[in-house]
Length: 151
Image: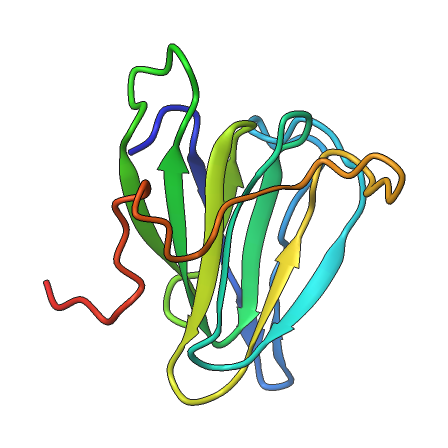
């Protein structure tokens, strides 16, 4: 796994009414701070990639559907620099994925229905000085396959 990436397994508390699933707590060991929270609705097959941050960490949770989240370590001095990996978040794999500063990331909804991705970035979005550094989703510099992979 890319250095600094962490996963928190989530546990739905199920009863006859449905379920309640806690996502993050301020006391979680891997959680650094709260900046804001947002939800993104994503249609199947659409790739939202790549970008990275210089000041914030992201904490991704998919609460509906499934997303293939791509990560690419582009940090100078990182033991895993140049490493790419995929994580599948959502139905069947309820996790929080911590994405460190400087790790490029993006995602694609897999399956036939839309997904809902919730993010808890550690900084508020500043439209006057956005911490959004973009790379094309199909950049040949990032060794990542957005297509369906069979393992």
